[in-house]
Length: 304
Image (cartoon, rainbow, N blue to C red; front, side, top):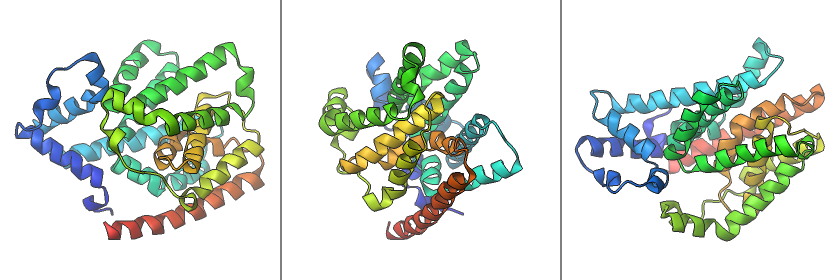
C-alpha cells in the first residue's frame, strides 16, 4: 500500500545496514563509554550491525520491527480498556489508522521501537513482574535518547502516586508539568543536547503549525473540561505528552513527535469518557481530522 519512498527514515536505516555489512561506518563502536551507549544510541546500532551481517533481507527486518511496534501498541491499548468487545476493537482499529501513527511505526522506527520496549517494561512492571521488566527498562535509553524522557516521566508518576496521590486526582498537574517542560525546551533544550554531543542540537525549526495541531489543542481542552483523573499511569503520560505537544506548538517547537509518542496513551483516554454523546463527538471529530491529515500526508509525499 505504501511505497518505501514514503518512509524516508526507513531508507536511511537500510543504507546504514548496507554500510555495516560492507564494513563501513564502524567508527561508531570506537571508544565506547557508559555515556556513549545513550548519546550514540548503541543498542540500535548493534541491532542493525547484527542483522546486517545475517543472510537476511534488510527491508524485511525493518518490516518485522514495524510489526512488533504495531502489535505492542495495539495490545497495550486493548489491555487498558475494561469493557472490551468486538465493537470496541473496531473503534480502536479505526483510531489507529492515522498518518501520525503509520509514519511513526513505519518511518520513525527507532523512536517507535524505543517506545514499544518502554510499553513492554510498563506492562511487566505493573503486572508485578519487576525483575524481568528491569531488562527492558535498561534497553530503552540505548535505542533512542527519548527513552530517558519517558522513563523520567514514569518515575515521576510513581513518586506522585506514592507520596502525593491527590495531585493525580485532578486533571491540571500534567498540563502544568507539560507547560514547564515546554518552557525548558524553549530555553535550554539546545544546550542540553549540545553538552551531550547530540546531533539533534543542530536541527533547524521542526515545529508544526497550529492548523495541523488544532484537533490536539481541542482534545486537551476537552480532557480538562471533562475532568479526566490521572490516577493511572497511561492517563498521566497521555495528558502530559499531549500538553507538551500543545505548548510546543505555541512556542514553535517540535510538537508532532510528542503526539506520536503520546498516541498510545491518549487513545485509551477516549474510553474514560462516560457520557456517550461526548465520546462519539470526540471520536467523530478525531475521524474527520484524521481524514484531513491523510489528504495532507499524501499531498506532502507527492512533493518529496
